[in-house]
Structure formats: structure tokens, C-alpha cells
Length: 128
Image (cartoon, rainbow, N blue to C red; front, side, top):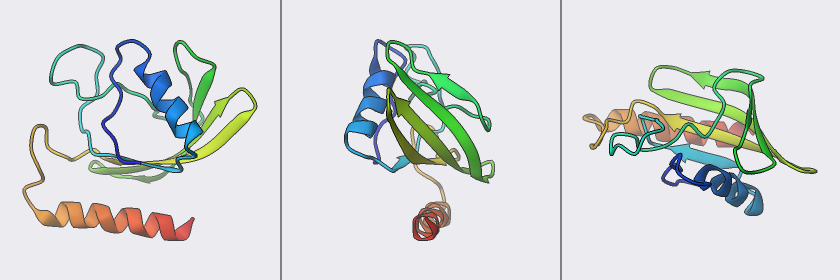
């Protein structure tokens, strides 16, 4: 799934993870660099995933938990996280692929950065 990240307003984060579970999404591609919790235009997405290994994020207003199982790839520009999403008795493994180097309100200056990200996604999908 490639989507705009949820904002921190209301129950958008809970709705986001409910959609992931309902549609058996196994791969999330995030191109948003900045994350925040204000209503500023600069805050493109709320922090909707846990950051460190074994961290569990309880999603406000729901019975959903997201656990950061492990970092599979971690550089300043690119991250691949192995997440476990649980709601009640349902549990799903979700890979969160993040292009943290995507420029705010723009596109990468060099096509090579996007091509490298595409290659990283393809290689990850092939090894799973």
C-alpha cells in the first residue's frame, strides 16, 4: 500500500491500521520525510509506527497494537521495518518501507535516489 500517512487528528491512525488489517496489506511504502503531531502544513504525517526494536505502540482509541519486530535496513535515507500489527486475536506481519530522504514539498534532485529506493523495495519483496 502506498498512501498518505495518517494525521494525529481524531482516529486517523486507528483507521489507517484497521484498513491495513482488513485488506491484508503486507507492505507499506512511505515517502513522507517529516512526521509530527501539530496541525501545521509541515507535518505531513503522524508517527504511526514504533521506532525501535521490540517497542510496542498502543493505538489510541482502539485495541490495536503495533510492535517493531526489527529493522531490516536502516540508513539516513531508507528504512525497512518489520512490524507486527495485532487487533484482538488477529495478527499480521507488515513491512514498512520508508524513504526518509524524500524532500519536503518536492521531489528528489537525482533520479538515482528514487531508482535505488525502487531497487531496495524489489529486492526486499523477492527475499520474503
